[in-house]
Length: 363
Ligand SMILES: NC(=O)c1ccc[n+]([C@@H]2O[C@H](COP(=O)([O-])OP(=O)(O)OC[C@H]3O[C@@H](n4cnc5c(N)ncnc54)[C@H](O)[C@@H]3O)[C@@H](O)[C@H]2O)c1
Image (cartoon, helix red, strand yellow):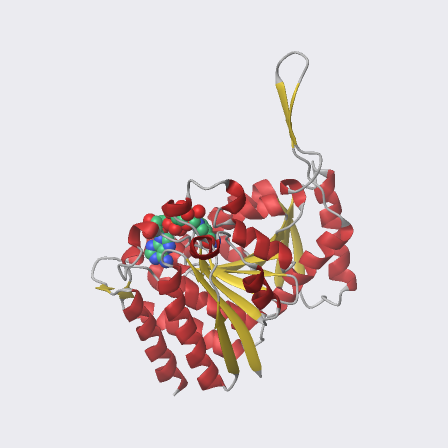
């Protein structure tokens, strides 16, 4: 197997963390006997500086013709004053749209060594390992009608519309069931079916896909979103895969992310079309750029997600995750996850330690 991967490091700490991520990828390829061909492109602020637009046609074509896209981070104070239509982050939205990425996957796994970084009690969060699948291109963020209108009495009326069609729900439900098959085999579908008709349809369609799609090996439960928000902080270990609408997923994935206590540890994937796009959850962190302080583990775990979800290289993905865990268990920490009595390391050293562990564990 030979995978063509487009690497878009972006701005700020993007290039620093991506360097460590791609080195882990090349190492995994060598050790597990698959080929990778990396092609690098510029996006976001770097592309605005070079081409006056955040995403060029040639980079978009590269991405479309690839087997997977690895993205760093985009944006920074230098470009904050630009018009919204040409801001660096537009590249992200354009890539999602052009690649047809309708499902956002955010795993939330608490490494036991980092349990004290969470704001919740160790006994509540320890062992948390869940995946939020958020519908990404439909729902209330895109539904029509929307907007603010003036009323005859001088007041205003703001409207947004929650809209979902059967195919939109079917395809994201399938992503969740497929993901659950590769995990612990449980899906919790989150809605507000007791109040919102659009999510009554959501529940009906998810139930049908489960029944008719050959997913009898996967357990399906339904949960109302308000209860889910509570359950996430009461007992997060009850969840394996959670699938939900665009807005509920936006909120719940951030709530779930905070269970781990650190943004520098969180990977994500956007799936749907032929090509998946993988990126760390964090931004470009201008406050620490160029100082070798960034935590590369989110990007390294992003590489592992790509191997798992796009290429089905499960063994390689698991080794990377185990190596990350082993390095944390040995007490090494970047600044964002630093704890008393732990060993402080920079971005490059953290990357090197993970590679060293992978090599040692494989050998
Ligand atoms: N997907 C993306 O490309 C993306 C996502 C979020 C924000 N942004 C952009 O990034 C810029 C900065 O945004 P922000 O400051 O709100 O969010 P941020 O995620 O860049 O940083 C928030 C805080 O977390 C720290 N942090 C983030 N990633 C880290 C890492 N890997 N290791 C150690 N510490 C880390 C930063 O130092 C900062 O203190 C903005 O221009 C924003 O628009 C881009």
